[in-house]
Length: 479
Ligand code: TXE
Image 1 (tube, protein in one colour):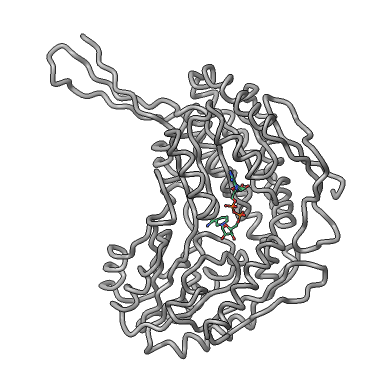
Image 2 (image 1 turned 45 degrees about the vertical axis):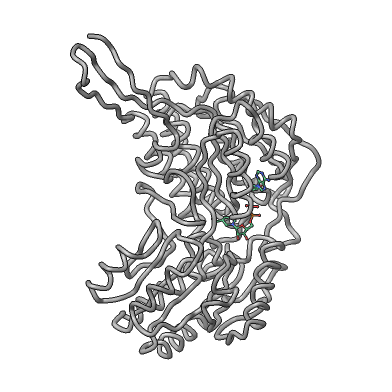
C-alpha cells in the first residue's frame, strides 16, 4: 500500500506529474499512504482545455446515459465503502466508522444525482403576446472548476462532481494537497464509468499553481470552492474580475446554545459530538458553546466528565472516538489557538495539549476553554478539537451571542421549549439551524450552505444544486 502512486487524470489519460511527494498518514508519520506527482500550470490548463473540448457533446448527452454513469459510480463507492473508508481514515485521520459513513454518503450522493439527471425541470408559461409560446429550460453552465478541501475528501468532491455531471457540465477537479489518495480513488472509479474522455479531469498539485491556472483559464465557466475564508475571498475577487459564476463555502464559528430547560444529557452529547468529533475539522463544528447561567456549572461538569471518557488515537482502532489532526500545519494552528486561549485569559476546562499515540501522529486532546465572547478562540475559526464555552444570562442574550459573529453557516439550540426553539429557528443568522441535534451532521438531499462570511453564491446539494450547475434559457416561439 505504501508503494501506491497517485496520478492526475486528464482527457482520459493518467498523468504522472512531477516529483514524488509523500501522502502523509497523520496517525502514523513513519508510513505514508502513498506518493504523488504534482502538475505545473501548463498541464492544469490542458485539463481545462480537455473539459472545454468535451463540453459540446456532453452538454447534449442523453440524460439516461448520465444517470447510468452516476449510478455506476454510486454503486461502486457503496460496494467498496469499507475499503474507501479505510483509505480516508489513513489519509485524513477521521475514525474508521466516520470514514466508512462518509464513503457511503459519497455513494448516496452519486445515486441521488443519477436520479436528478432524469428530472431536470423546465416550465412553459402563457405568453403576454397572442400566438407566442414561452419555454424556460435549464442548460449546463459549462466547464466547472472544483476546488475542494481536505476535511471531507470523499463527500465534498462527490457533492460537487455528481451534480456537475448530472446537469451536463464537464469538470476539472482539484483536491486539497494532503488528500490525493481519496481524489485518485474517485477519479479511478469515474475513469471506468463510461464517461467520454475529457468530461471529468482531476489535477493534483498546489492551490497556488494548479488552482490558479484553472481559475485564470478563459475556458472555465464556473467555479465551486470549499475551503478557508482568505483563499475563498481571493478567488472571489479574481472570479468577479472576469465575471465567472461562483459558489463558495468557507468557514464557520457555529454556536450551540444550551438553555436552562434543555435535557442536559442531550446537550452534552450534542456539544461533544459537534465540537470534537472528526477532530473538530468540520465547517459545521460547534466551536462556540453558549450556555445559560442557570445550568452553566452543571453543563461544564458533565462536559468535563464526558470528555474524560473520549479516546483519542489511531482512527483504525476500535473504540477510538477522535483521530489525529489532519496535518502538521493544522496542528500548529490548533496549538497556537490553545496558546491564544491562555493569553486571552481563558480558563482551561479540558485537554490543552498533545496526546501520545501508539504511533507517531498529530494527536491532540479535545480542548475546552471557558472564554469571553471577545477572545480569539471564541471568534476565529480554528478547525480543530478546540472549543470555547460562553455564559449567557438568558435566551435573548444567548441568541445575541450566537449571532455575534462574522460567520453564518449553522447554529444549534438545545431546549425543551417550543417557543424558544421556534424563535431561534427564525432568528438565528445562519443557513442551517439544528434543534436538539449537533450542529455537524446534515442530510445529503437538502440544501447546504450559510450566510454572511460563510458562503457566497447558490446553495449546494439536493435539488437546489441546480441553481449553480445550470443556467436558465427563456425561449419564445411564434405559434
Ligand atoms: O484551506 P485553503 P486549507 C479552513 C480552516 C483551515 C484552513 C486552511 O480554517 O485551518 O482553512 O486549510 C486550494 N488558488 N478550512 O489550507 O488554503 C487548496 O489547494 C486556487 C475551512 O486546506 O483554503 C485547496 O484545494 N486554489 C473549510 C483548497 O483551495 C487554491 C475547509 C482549500 O485550501 C489557492 C477547509 C489559490 N490561490 C479548510 N490556494 C471549511 N470551513 O469547510 C489554495 N487553494
